[in-house]
Image (cartoon, rainbow, N blue to C red; front, side, top):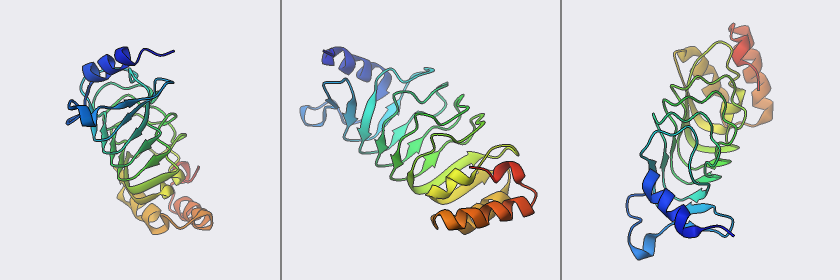
Length: 184
């Protein structure tokens, strides 16, 4: 049995849930300890890992510039934007399965995009490196690759067009000399 009061205390200590403190907008804590939030949630303190486990966040989820080294305990679904800018993430394992808005992971030392959301309703932002596989970003509506606008242009040409387009995108990236980015 989980201690829901302890989870609520951790939630209130580490997160600014904006309008959560009235009785109607309390986060819902499931019997397994997973927290669902009705509004946007903002991580206020530097941590390497989220101190509570999230299920669904119906607004934005922001954990930017907070020293995160892992995405363990991240929400499975973020209906708004998911902002993870400027952390210590090398992989996206544990990222939300679905992001309704933008997915921002720029300014992280990413080595791969394993764990990239299956659905991104808005744009994804990521920092370019010549060895970062970028084909997973084609799940987003728009792709912004900071540091390499030509790669952004090629990816956006094929975004949200399915697997067949992915192969065309891969070939175009390779032909343009971006072999390291032309991988899943």
